[in-house]
Image 1 (cartoon, helix red, strand yellow):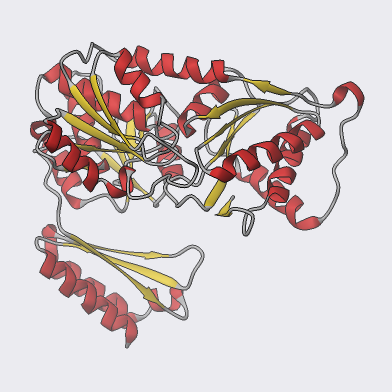
Image 2 (cartoon, one colour; image 1 turned 135 degrees about the vertical axis):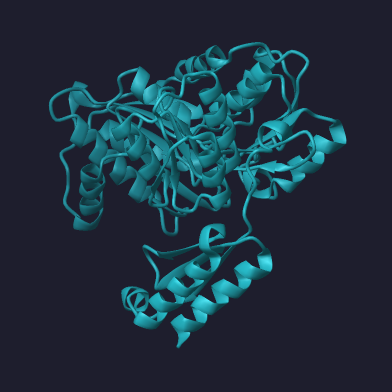
Length: 432
């Protein structure tokens, strides 16, 4: 549930979401729900509203306070909660907020529960209130967050002593946590954008504005830099030369490292259809298989869970490590990249050099009927012609917006000019 705070997403929504979850999970036992939040000013307001709704329905609400989405996922799973709630709008500006729901396994909430909440929000029906000693309570659960930090530290294979590591915390959820982890592991830690004021989350910082970390790494002679988003479920890296190492690069580096260590087995790398063609060519060269899902880390996680794959993710930096977490985890991703660097004794620029990004162009087209446009014979002919001309050195991806009358046209090719030409050719066919 996401939107502008108190405009699209209000405290009444949060209260009723809490009411429904407390009632739904409390039908046959005392429900336990763990809640985390990012640094947006409105996150405190929504936290209070959710707690009021949960406790009014008889559930106990455990507060992690300011923390990351993956920490809520970890605690929900490890400490036997009925579900978890993260209050965040991820990489969106401060005036937006969201209520992310996770099931007891720390995974994206089941659609049946989400559908039930939506129906309740729209219906105007009233749920029974808890009374007397059945009323729930609110519990300070900072200990859960600290245990998650300990879990992250335990995953490191060796000390980072002598490594100069830069962290861009996006004035968000990692503003204290990330430095604590890297300090504990012995790194010389350099941190920027770790002074949240409720309004500056993601403002000209973090993974959506990585150019600042690039300059910071070069200016300070750092070995590597990591940039997180507002709730730290994604991570992008910067190598020692100031080059961006995106999610596709990270998938390549980590899969190659696991293969070389003999721990990858028959696993495959799970990507979305928007991963760069360069990743697939690099994996082909290594003999590593891959799967492609619809866009969204939810679909990546589902594929990994169903097939037992060890790693998957998106170019944006949502990386999931199958046996270690059930959601994208920015700090965990940084730890796994550091593992590859430390164990191979190679800089990140060398580790990522085996994958070359293909130029990519994406344009959005407003249409009256998405399906009619995609099924138009002239459009299909234009796509087929472009694919034939590009051959093995490019590809075309057409995607429908789920909520608006828009089509996304993406072409990868060997040059920016060629991408532009082929995208425009397909769009011209759509307009005709």
